[in-house]
Length: 165
Image (cartoon, rainbow, N blue to C red; front, side):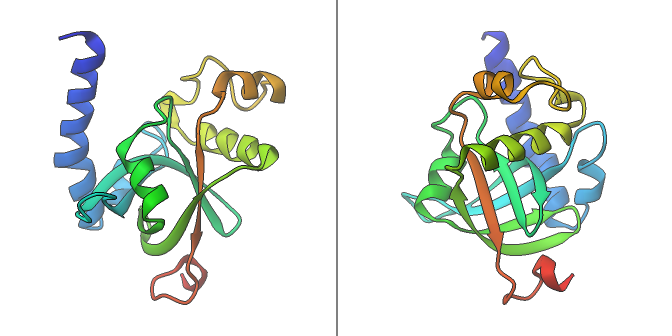
């Protein structure tokens, strides 16, 4: 097994048996912290089976929206599931909320979101080889390339939405 495979297996184990159960039981504040970064869990229906899946991701809140990104792999299962089934449940450290996810296509919005996500990523904030606080826009765009960014518009009409919190 190569190093990458070992790391993926480790994170899959930690996510399945520690992160997701902590968020589902209301202990997300312990997991989402200044070292690990701002983490949330998405509850998404599978695009093929309809089975409910839980996926931890880094996030940022900008105004009324929540943003997250796919990472370097554009074929991630949670991302493909969200595109097929955009109505999601968002498990934040402060509670559960309903929302609707969509890919961000506006370059300026995407850049702002990715900076905020990376600024809140704890020890991983410079994982792409730059400081998101001071690096010029053109360098950030070059480094993140075509990494998909997702905007989740929270539903203000459903119980538990952030606008009512």
